Amino acid sequence: MPNFTAGTTFGANDTVTNTKLNALIADAVINPECALSVNSGTISTLSCTRGTIPTFTSTTGTIATLNSTTGTIATFNSTTGVIPTLTAGTTTSTAANITNGTVQTLTASTLTGVLTGGTYSGLINSSTGTFTGSIGGSANLTSGTIQTLTASTLTGTLTGGTYTGSLGTSCNFTAGTIGTLTASNDATVNSITIGRGASGSVTNTVLGLTASTNSTAAGGSVSIGYQAAQSIVSGSNTAVGYTALGGANNNSSGGLNTAIGAQTMIGLTSGSANSALGYLAGYTVTSGKFNTSIGYAAGSTTTGTNNTQLGNGAFDLTGGATASNTIVLGNSAITTLRCQTSTISGLSDVRDKSNIEDIPIGIEFIKDLRPVKFTWNQRDGMRVGLTDSGFIAQESLDIVNKHNAEWFGLVDHQNSEHFEMTPGKLIPVLVKAIQQLSAKVDNLEAQLASK
Image 1 (tube, rainbow, N blue to C red):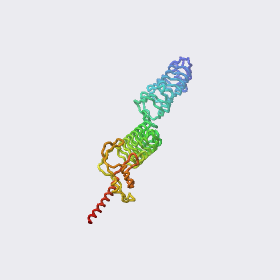
Image 2: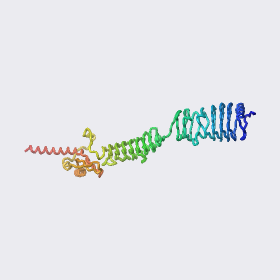
Image 3: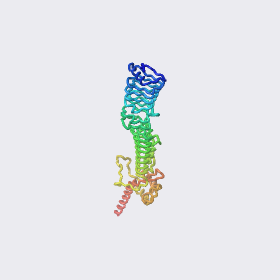
């Protein structure tokens, strides 16, 4: 069998044998510029047991099996050819470029060395998994999807590299190391958002489906729960609970609010510095500020300021939603207010008062009042059948008007459906009445003494 010289080509019907190829390989060693070209046809088996093939070029041909035991293929180029199986053995390739071809199988058993270059744009291990980029010291995935990534195909260490594509439905690492994995955007795990929210501020903490999704200018905020603070567009707020701080209902610019509990402050629009704790607590607040609502459905304020509502269903029934500077303890069913002391201290410093004068009402006002005994039958059903004593607000209001004494706030009738009284306001009037009675007694005693 004669030797072939470098540059020998084979036609589609030529018979290629190992003897011929080895002879060609031997000649190729002498001339490093030699090339083995397959322009058409099929090579069933190409075996290299010694020597070097500097260049192997395939244009349209098909190579069923390419085996290399001890030789080196310096350059392997495939433009449109198909390589069903690539078995590396101990072969190294300094540049392996496949621009349009297809690699049917790529597994760890055929890639035991280091891939130090080359660009792969064919299929990897899956008919639906594409990989575009380079593998080497830095592995960059710029597009495409890897359906399955397992330790059996990655027995080494992934260090460096940047991944901007997507990992498919299965991404299993049973061995090996990922050096660095950095997410530049919020992550979603089982439809739950984890990250910084719409503003992307590093001072935000977001955990929950669609939580803080409208907070484009928010910073220093915490949003935990389904739709928590979703409607907050700016400001620093804390929302913990299902739809806490507005849910998806409003676009609020309020800040410095704290809402803890399901549906707390869900109606907020622009209110600031409000605090709510408990299911539905503070749910009526819209633009109000500095309000505190603690308890189940506590709070009735919408636009009011500096109110405190404490307890189950604590509402300001008289002042209403726009009231300011009030404290409500409990709902209308409360019958006893207990404290270790029975008195409440308040500011009474002369330096904080002006236009000081003696009150103009006393004994005559007290004589007009009608103390009564009665049984509660509240319209809201909270207190029914309880015996008590006190005054009738409507009767007392007539007396107040008679003496032009509305100025001292005995009767609150802001809400025509709920009249209230403050009996403690009567103490100065009672003192004045006693003084007037005392003066009469002194006068009578003096008259008796003179007789």
